[in-house]
Image: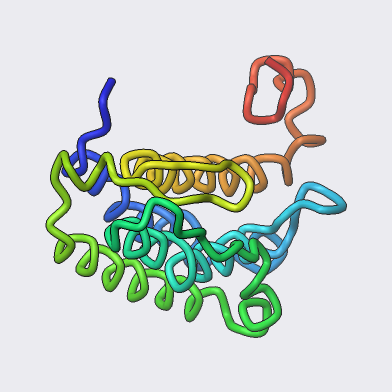
Length: 175
């Protein structure tokens, strides 16, 4: 399947309300728990998504559009907004993500990306040459991966309570 910007945008615009619906009103015991050492809580995932809106997707798209195929992306700090994000209530973090995503989508819409632009390239610090198509496809998949991650972290809070049903609940890692 070939990436279609309009279809991808449909996912990107749905991510903030999806996460807001899933997380709003849950106690910190749910939203600040994680899966163990070196894993992220749903709260941290939202902080990570905010950071991506600010420093990753659109800045990289702009770099690609500049047309210098030797231009290198600035490395992305995956935990770059964790300290500030942890200090914010989740409701504020979700709102910040929604606003930041709306701004990113407006910027994306203003870029006039067509087939030619989807084939432009730049240099990723770890992956080498990447296309705009790959960047935008990765953005969509990145969102879906974090939605799945948040769901999995929430589900695993009840891992010990489901008893023998663990065998049938793939989100718990059993199936």
